[in-house]
Image (cartoon, rainbow, N blue to C red; front, top):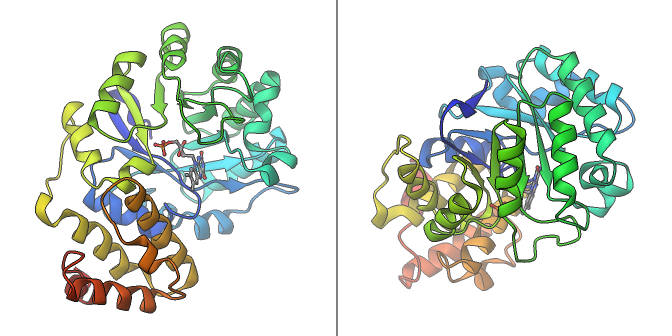
Length: 330
Ligand SMILES: Cc1cc2nc3c(=O)[nH]c(=O)nc-3n(C[C@H](O)[C@H](O)[C@H](O)COP(=O)(O)O)c2cc1C
C-alpha cells in the first residue's frame, strides 16, 4: 500500500480515539485517503501477530476498514531488531504497510526509549527504519516531530529516516517540548520535502480550510494529515479533499453533527473504552465549535448515561435529534 501516488489526505493516528470503530466510521463518513493505527508499542519483546490482529482488526479484512479505508500499522520502539521482528509479524498477519512513530511525546513512552525520544539520536532513527525496511516487503514510513526541542533538528532526522529507506515521512510541525501548544512551523516541512525528494505528509494544527490553504502554501506539498481538526469539524475532511481534487462523499451538511456523533455511538458498544473515546471526541468538538454542551456530559460514567444526557438535551432542542439514529444503528 502506497497511498501517496497523488494528492492525499490521511486521518492521523490518535491513541484512545481513532480505534477500529472510529476508523471504520470515519472511513464511511469522511473523505480520507488512508488512516494510521494507534501506535502498537514494542518494548522488551517483539509484538506477536495475534496482538496486531487484536489492535488492528482491519488486518483480517485486507488492511481496510469495512467502509474501505486503508489502515497502516504503526509501531513504536527504539530497538531495531525487536521493531523489525514485530513488523515482520504484522506483515505476516496482513499489514500492507508499516509506519514508525518517532513523535509520541508521552513521558512514560519517552522514558522507555520510544517515540519522540529518538529525535535526539538521528542515527538511531536511521537504524530502526533500516531494520524494519529490510525485514518486510511492504512500504515503511516514519512519523516525526520537528525535533526534541529545536525545529532545526528535522533536517538531520528526516535525512536519516530517508537514508534508512523510508518510503515517505509524515511530519508534525512542532517539537516534542512544544507538546501541543501553538505555534506550528510548517515551513521546515516544505524545506525537507524539497531537499529529500521523497513524499512528505504535512501535519499539525490544520483546523479549518484557511489553515489548510496556508499549510499547503508554506509546504508546497500535496500530502496532508489531519487529526483533531477532523473530529472537531465534521466537514473539514470533505472541504480539504475537494481542494485536493479527491473524491468526496457528500453528507447532508445540515445533519452532519448528528450523523457524525450518533453513528459512532450506535456502533461503539457500551464499554468504558467507547465512553472515553466519545468523550474525547465531544471535548474536541466543544473546544472547536461544533458541540456546546460538554460540561453536561463529561461526568457520565457510562455510554448509556451519556446517551440519556443527550436525550435530555435533545428534548430541550439543544442538540440535533440523535437518539433515533443511535438506536437503529443507521
Ligand atoms: C489524543 C492523541 C493521541 C495521539 N496518538 C498518536 C499515536 O498513537 N501515534 C502518532 O503517531 N501520533 C499520535 N498523536 C499525534 C497525532 O497523530 C497528530 O500528529 C497530532 O495530533 C497533530 O495533528 P492535528 O493537529 O491534526 O491533531 C496523537 C494525538 C492526540 C491528540
